[in-house]
Image 1: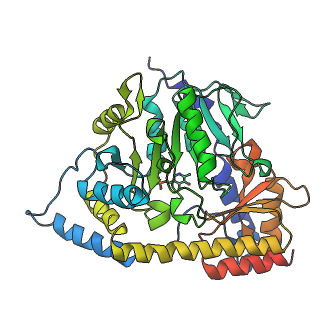
Image 2 (image 1 turned 90 degrees about the vertical axis):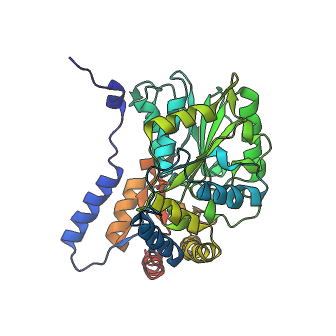
Image 3 (image 1 turned 60 degrees about the vertical axis):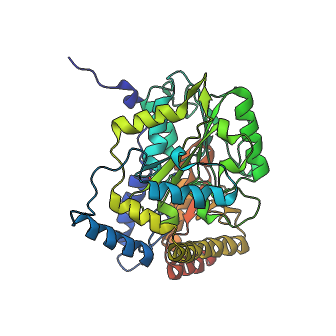
Length: 404
Ligand SMILES: *Cc1c(COP(=O)(O)O)cnc(C)c1O
């Protein structure tokens, strides 16, 4: 008789977003006259920019013509896109990354989940707490952790790196040496950024202890401050210790279109074996590439027109983020993030738990956010608001919170 992968049974239910939906629906049903404003969403709301739409239309027409039809894409992705990425995201910023070190994919969620496959099962993983749950859950599924410890509220065998106000939500080096370190900056959910000097310390540490850093740069486009790195490869020595994940979701609105990429430098080697070869093999065996049409849309992200339009789009969300940050602060809230990220992370007032504040905010202001405790133990008593709503709703939500 067959057996299931019992590591899946270790997974904790992800009740966060379904619980939120249930509570919001119940409230809306009991209060049909009240307009609920949702600032909990982690999805963009603006439509695709005209330059991207135009590239999509052209690519669709190409697919209908025998001379310009495209079938299976090359394993690593089309060269036109990898060249544009290498130039714009790396070489123009002084980072030495070549087009053949870039693997185009359908997004950073799948890559951040799949990348662990190329590492041995007995590697010790370090994650931030709170965290984007994909890094942790995919390692649980792969059997790289022990069981979930109810009392401690964490998985055995995982190194949790607390990110709290006291350390500006940037983790400290763990006491025990990890093998695989997941970092995401600017961060979801805390909205925190890391300075180049702080990231350099992590790169030096990883090189010294022989660890690999998996660096999620999904929110790179939201950086507004000078000393915050857009890529880990801005740090010296990162080519020998870091893999970087990118997404077109948050900078260009591709959440429904699906496109991302992963960088594996050829200098990244474990006992002489290039991780690049392993990831290339994995990609080639298990994946047949992002659609040609979508890769053409991705190329348009780097056109002059595309860059200009997307800068405006990101600026719209950045304006919402600053609006929330500044207003909550002026109302006396303890508030973080928002400057280099579309997320605002605030401390629930009056010693409320994350869920108590959720209920309070829904009840009194009819505003929906995300309880910080849903992202990990250290997220308890914190709360996440996002900048992905409309400006009008953002302003109205702050007006309502002001009166609490
Ligand atoms: C949204 C997000 C991603 C991007 O996911 P896609 O699959 O590319 O849409 C990756 N990492 C984090 C932390 C995110 O919040």
